[in-house]
Amino acid sequence: MKWMKNIISLTILAIGFQSCIKQVTVDTRTEKPILVVEGSITTDTVPYRVRLTYSGPFTSTRDISDEQIEKNAIVTIEDNGGNATPLVYKDSGIYITTDPSYIGKVGRSYHVNILLKDGTRFISRPETIKPVQPISAVKVNFMMDFSIELPTYLNVSVDTKDPAAEENYYQWKFYSLIMRQTWGVPCGFQCIKFEYCYQAQVDNEIRVLSDQNINGNEIKNQTVGRSYIYTYGNPYVEIAQLSITREAFQFWKRYQDQLTRTGGVLDPLPASIKGNVYNANNDADFALGYFSASSVFRKKVIIIPYSITEYLLDISARSHIPQGWLSCFEYYENALPYPDGRYAPPPPGWENAEQIKVYW
Image (cartoon, rainbow, N blue to C red; front, side, top):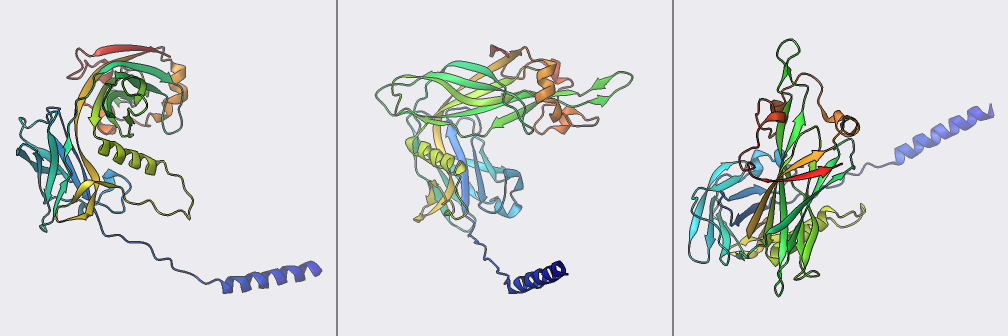
């Protein structure tokens, strides 16, 4: 019975330890909401937008609560020539310009002026638009790097020539229309419709570069985005190459560093990244985010991937097709409502775009 005594002793000891544990309530840190400003003006002839929200506990832009959206501000974009254009509220904290003749010009400086409903005024430090170099070549490569979350993809890169004798800072933005697939909707005997559609996707990865180590030389094979392969189809890609200021480059580099930071649980919490927007009466009171001014060169291409096989789609993409009879353009967010996207003509703007063939 010695083993029975040992069990009883251990049980009593465990109960004793449990009674000694004191529950501790850890105070969570609460911060006053801070205004977040996201916006830009470029040399593009498109409406410019400024988004106003407040910092708080959300995990994505779709999770922002109504209380974290600023709907009642007066927002204007102004230049150093005394010209200004007002922005009107649209939705989700987004304000847009309405005057198509107000376009960013190289050599001019621009800032945003924000008047909140409580009378507080925020302004951004002026940024001067610098000229941008054209993209000299677009390159595409198959990448056999897929996972449960994402299929294999096409890596898109560019070449450009950096001008000598001056500082240059670059940023790239990437937009694509990619083919998606569902099982479609039955429409009679051996008839299926709405099986394919094009989905608009924006690559939100921050891609910036300084010419500090390459001044006056070619910039080659600069990755600008990824186009994922979910099914057969030709991706439509638009690349924007922007000239940004040194301050904007430094802001995005700090933002990048914070995103990739991998510290321990005892490391200090990341500090708020100061942008270029501040309280007009107290520059120590700053907003989060950044308002930029830049020139932009856009390049549209149609990628024609050859040698996509059923085997490739089976191992990397088939698991991403949702189960059930579903309309493709109703199921996927930001899908274009083509009756049959697989055979649809190029969307507006891509009719005469360069075609790039790529082989697996």
